[in-house]
Length: 370
Image (tube, rainbow, N blue to C red; front, side, top):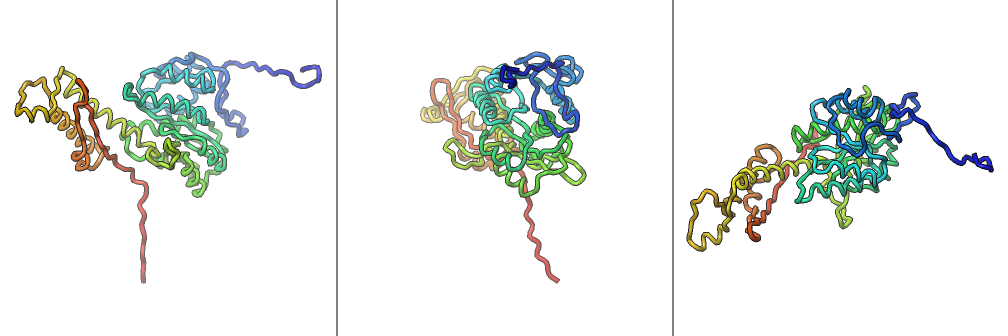
């Protein structure tokens, strides 16, 4: 207390463990703890719940999240990393500590606009041609429909899927995030192009879920939507990213669907792996097919590949992607794929792939008569 009897400073002591989810059933939904047990900015393989508890503490947020995740998905390998705080600079530090570790889903409680932007910058670098590391970000946000509508206008990232929940559940955003990730990650692993919709999530109901009108509005505002049924089950009704406009600020749905980037990533990796196997596992020389034809020559040396040979491999790989249910329209690809010898030892390739689409609705018009 200061001389004017006002509160001058407040200090807290803690036992070093995270706050349990709504321990007194007060409706309070904590989203983070100030005290962190265990390593900070260090990527740690989870291994088992007992292992995580011993490293981070039994009641720590990261432990609670992992516990909820493995309740649904106990197969996918999970790595954990904590930030020193929820500030953008500390988030960036933690993300940088991941370095070149490959992953499919990054699940965090961070969903504020500046945090989403920091995570977008992180993924921009991973998707760069020099890195070829992919993945998406998943988070959860509990708020009213009105506030979620306002929130959607503040975020715009093709990498981040933020799932909106109605207030009232005893589960906080820590475990909601984990529960959502636990259904999205296996779906992507099984088939990245399969629709992520109408999936049951291991979350306690709010008892007052969003109406269909609210859900449609929330979805159109850039937030993935959840619904609750009369039995108290909660579903991820339809997933989407926060991406809504392109760099010019024009409305754009290119990256709206959460499934898009994981599907593109698998296609990219398939082209890369097939080309590596065909052309780089053994040292190859490159000859321009047009130059070879103009000279009226032919080469039988097995360590020489032509641009036409590379094109044939790309067409074969695309057929594999079609057979895998990831792409479609072989005719357009075959007619437009191009392979050009760009500079010394560098081949430029253009691959116009057409992704499959997710079935979202069947609109039935029933006409009846007596």
